[in-house]
Amino acid sequence: MNPADHTFVATVEHIGVEETDEAIARAVSAQSDWARVAPKDRAKLMRSFAAIVDAHSEELALLETRNSGHPISQARGEATIVRDVLEYYAAAPERLIGQQIPAPGGLNVTFHEPIGVVGVITPWNFPMTIGAWGFAPALAAGNAVVLKPAEWTPLTSLRLGELALEAGLPEGLFQVLPGRGSVVGKRFISHPGVRKLVFTGSTEVGKRIMAGASEQVKRVTLELGGKSANIVFADADLESAAAAAPASVFDNAGQDCCARSRLLVQRSVLDRFLERFEQAVGTMRVGDPMDPATEMGPLTTLAHRDRVNEFLSDGDPVAFRGSCPDGPGAWFAPTVLLPERDARASNEEIFGPIVSVLPFDTEEEAIALANDSEYGLSGSIWTESLARAIRVSRAVESGTLSVNSHSSVRHTAPFGGMKQSGLGRELGPDAPLKFTETKTVFFAATE
Image (tube, rainbow, N blue to C red):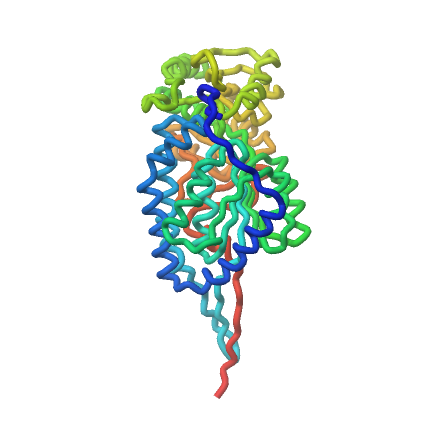
């Protein structure tokens, strides 16, 4: 369903266990052949995949907007990211370089062997981009991929599977398998032919996947929940910090694990910051996702909107709200709360356009408050002091931080969380190595 007006978009048939097993068998066969393809030829096919994604980027963006409610300008950017990630990892096949290690009586060398078949399970909030983070480096390293998209938002993933074939990737190498997590995802965990799992989603589900994978000592990469802090010190450029704050938490209607949903502001500048922040929220364009000027669209489903709305029934003081359309669609206005530190809104991942403003007095208190969470995925620090920026960024327990900005993910740098926000890292130059096993071979020196 289109979340902007709740109109019908498409019907997708879910597959069962038998079809999942058949797909995995095809993947096992395709991977065996793919691993023997010369690195330069694997790279060439991945560049072809990137090129065909680029040629269909507008189609993919429109499809994402209709299925997920992403503003069209942002959906276009997401299609571009898929292309960029494929191009970036197309360089990897010819750069999976091992080591030569001197050893008494001979020589040790290492090889990076592909793991085999990788199961990628993606969330509903960023289907295209998060899918590419998993399948692009996995394919580059010589693996096959079976990808299960979220039930709510499968359409762009299915189209990417078709485009991979059009680009010339072998049959069975990259397959998109729509279905229930309790069916397809569960089979990825239990099937011995799937040798690694990449999952993005809730911490609760990630724990179950990790436990299930342990039965076969199956490798996992997990990118899970977040309750990230946006820390604004009194010496910060308050105009810039307040102007940037809405996008840090309301992008994609707050449906982002990296959303800075805890806004920590030094008490001495709290009133001045809130005045500027209210102005910035008031001017945020919430509306028709097909309008290029729209900055925030609807939530992805009506059911999720109802879940987010539950946080407003707790009685936490509302500082101010933005606006959103009336009528059909999963609309929810950007909302700023002033809750207590122990309130649900201050601690639980809402995954919607609600931010909690929490004052602090000292640098030490800000660090303690930022770290007072089971999560540690992302965050921001606003200060004009380089020394403070270094101190705080080293002290905050988070996998990805930005200073005087809200940048969270660049495909050229590692991304992942600490504590219950995940396990392992995605993206960056070393990502293909995470889809390989290091093999050591000793050559004896003989006459």
